[in-house]
Image (spheres, rainbow, N blue to C red):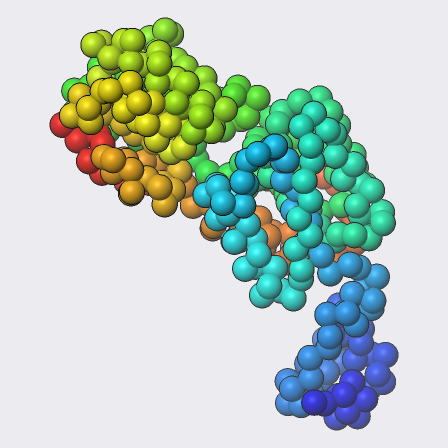
Length: 346
């Protein structure tokens, strides 16, 4: 394997210059950069990740913060596993490692300390809620110029980098699919209001109903916590009003499948189920009985995009000048798609 000294000799520069070029440190003339990169490619020289991290005074780690939920297998949950796969793929391509961290319920994460101790170079935050403590922690990160991205949560009026899906359009598509088939009494099982995507799903439902010249019955607006168990619990309310409910839209597949399971537990045969539409299009949707119509969310692509925004555009750049930050959120919304299966077909 070629050495840095050999690259320097072939390019006609010092070893220190080779190091600066390959690690993106300091101003370098374009001609010098071109010579070094050509020599490196010709000799097949690749600096080690450890050497790069020392040269840049960085950790080489991309941090991912996830909520800690007792007894929940987050890595097996479609929502988290797909996003982590996308993040990990981009990190691997860029020669970075993932440092996955968990915050306990009601804990305000000290994000800035992770940067100050050089444990991470950038941070992706999953499962954030719109509460004062979380907002203050993120504002501090931004004020200190640390690169971070919030996934699947919107903080209105802030200038955070955010990656999400178009949940308003996704829910609107789901309701339109149901109303186009003549379903009128539609129950909506949503997630907690503290998540912006729950609010956006509700907004999409309301828009879809209005387009069909209908209104959402407040008594059919139910709340779960995105778990299958909360869907099973909601099944009791739905079973009691089954004679007047002809369709159920759930804000994720886990809750939709939970409702189905809860109805079967109560002795209700599949042929007497209302129509069902879920959200996420997880692997379980296709295996549900009946197969579940669902709104597909590109979680993997969202993870890749979040990592790319940080690694390609932020890591290695000098801290941002606070006065130069935009007051408008840099929000990237990926499209959703309705996948129709037997659960919603008359």
